[in-house]
Image 1 (cartoon, one colour):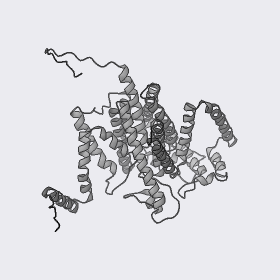
Image 2 (cartoon, helix red, strand yellow):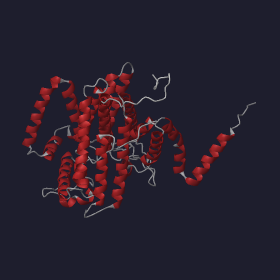
Image 3 (cartoon, helix red, strand yellow):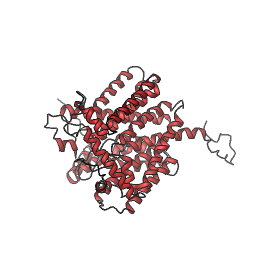
Image 4 (cartoon, helix red, strand yellow):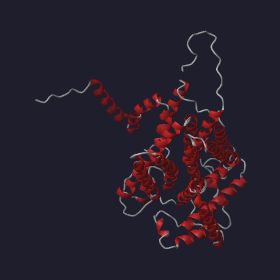
Length: 481
């Protein structure tokens, strides 16, 4: 005779409560309940707050009704950080404590000033709300990274999280490409291409809103993964090497030409730094490239058109969603010119956050003839200049200056030198990528990480404040050994 184990009463009660919550409040409340264990982990170990923020950098899944992964994550993360900071278990994300923090705070104020003082011809409140939500996530990521990365050990943990997330993105990309996997929510490629029923090629995008953003994220991770392969020992090295190939495959599946330029510059920078024999060929190659560009009238679209005509080369980017390379360069050049003209028309505070896309078209140059013009200006720096003016552009460039200065300080440090070199390569590629792409979250992580390296070096050379001895005499030492 079989004996049955009775269901514990608390477990039965919990199941009934969960069932009632789902029936009454729906899936959103159920997801909130499932998040409770994660929130407890955040309270117990504050460093996990940063890891969670890093994990959601490429994730933009929308569950409907305005509920996104980011909006689910930010409130518990911020609550856990404030609780632990009040309990002195982690530092406060203090924007006034460092040069990078003050510069980012000034950029935030420039965003507010751009909106308050905007005199744009067209002002769209919905776009403002959307962009403001995006910048909230970027600022939280920046300040939490800046405050919680205090040692080489913290950097190592952060990079492991970053690599783990990128591997998950690569696996999702393979599922999209080969098994037509469709993510839940508002997923652009599923809505646009119906890939779940299509047999044609398409651009994979993982959990990001566009293939370009996935390409930029994977591009940023690859130098760090290469560093881990170089430092790994034993069986871990071939495993990580296989993951590197996996990420490269996922990156190529995005068909992002702007990221291809960034990857090429990263390869050039890496070869220049680590292979001295390559420097002469690289200089010669740069001279040949300039000569070929001059032969095309210094026109990148014309050069791209000639490259596409080379047999086997143009077919490398053949997704049906892609415009020709020449057309892609052309509308980018035109949008850059339009954005710069818009900036010159409103040089101090710009037209306001999220408003450039509605105002730059009348400022296109006379030589503009492209029939395609995306909503956003495909250059992060020109986009900021047009929307926030000099008040926003100057602190943004200041953040890049602080990041590069911090990397320079860490270049020969025994603990940080490898990380500094990998991050420098990532920033080189990111700088090129941002020249062809609207603003992305990734940049706010890498800039904060670079600034944090500088703070680690500064803390070593700055003597700690001397605490006065207690007036109460005691045989015990004032501090634990």
